[in-house]
Image: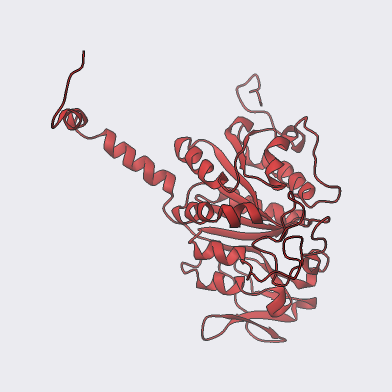
Length: 336
């Protein structure tokens, strides 16, 4: 762990300080490598001691993350990382708590834990690596796999309608929701920076390529930047060569893409209502041939950790003897 300098200040950390002595064991070419490098490079920006940073994961390829971060960490159980992170966050408000999960881990067995952590607005940062497949267990379809996906567990094609993780998070009242791409380090770092600065639950979906069991799933935005709809707060939402395409809201509140001149929606990530962010989350490769990238929502809301701390403080300030009177009330026995 980091030791103070002679003058009592913390030394300036670098990405190397967050690398462990563990061999990184993902398949060659896996998108997880790029995410790990981006996160290790970003961590020094937090300017807090490594012993105050914790990574908690569930089960899956992404869940190996804590082994490769020179911080505290825990490889927990399938789908339960948000619940474990909640307990740690509310009991240790001095810590920076991060959850690393995958689309199967978070949205299948862990679905309830995820949505309740988000609606409570627990002060944790949740990074969901979405590769639209179960990678660790060798290629079964996941809750984000598209309909018709042929896998070992769906040899005739998946019948399930997939989750849209961004829509799900917004619907769960998450106060911070964003999307990034594994290979776009600058944009991923920008999103991580915003998530870390947010007070409350921050949900970040990261398009992550599984080159073994679901290769090229996101090439339409990983390889072609013209298909990325960048969301920049305070800027008109335009994309394509020269910004020839724009996004605006219809009268019914849904979003549409238009060609050429016209007033594009000026993006407001701090809008008090969730409906504009939800409308943009519905823009997908299938609906408009492009995908929004960036911060969908970033709003202030009471944080669960602070609310619990207020309750505990209020309880401790009650008149002495009330608890004793309660425990000794009614029928009691003294056993010698």
